[in-house]
Image (cartoon, rainbow, N blue to C red):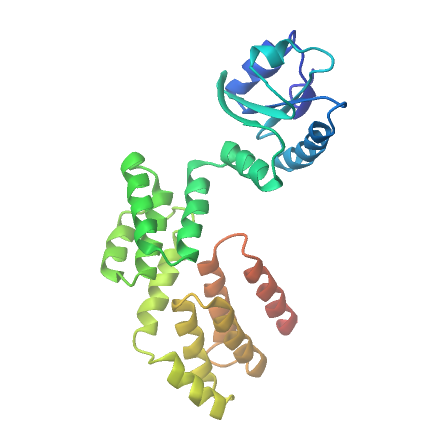
Length: 284
């Protein structure tokens, strides 16, 4: 069998080579299935579609129990479909019975994410709920477990700024190397938080903006305050208004502020992508 193939059939004879040995490098997800059991055939189609985008970071081994039940008996499979996960030569997880796509995706993500990616995923959930205490606790535990992991310290600084603990955030940032990936995000957030501190209240500025929508300085202040409060769409709309009205205003500050806000939103933000397209459309 081609070692690069992410989806393959597994037999008792190939189990040692194709599953145990390959799992030393990449997790292998075993699906026990049979054409005669429709839910398991559906699970096969579903998993084949889900595994493909992971580009070999996780492998899918298909065990057809209608051909041979040896492996099913060995791994104590009671019904179909059943999933067994082998990593490092050991059985590490299992799912029995039909599963929703969300459960399968969670399983695959857990097998393929780095510790930093998994932490960011969990962290995002806490931040969306405004639970800064849980977010900081998660990060502190991660740093205690991996004190040399600079990515965790970047996230710690970012959350401290969101909680308006600016002095602590500065201390956290001081422990992060200048060339650390994504260090620019908390650095930019800190700069904008410091700038926002002297700009007044959003409500008052909004009243002024409604009376005089052409006052670009007020719009700039609203953009900075909105970004500091993580009201990114609100902030970007005011930047676009500046960009549309006057590219020369404060040396193209509408565009440069949009770029700073994109940095705050992190990689993979759909909102950032949408506003980036709108920015380029206005510029060209």
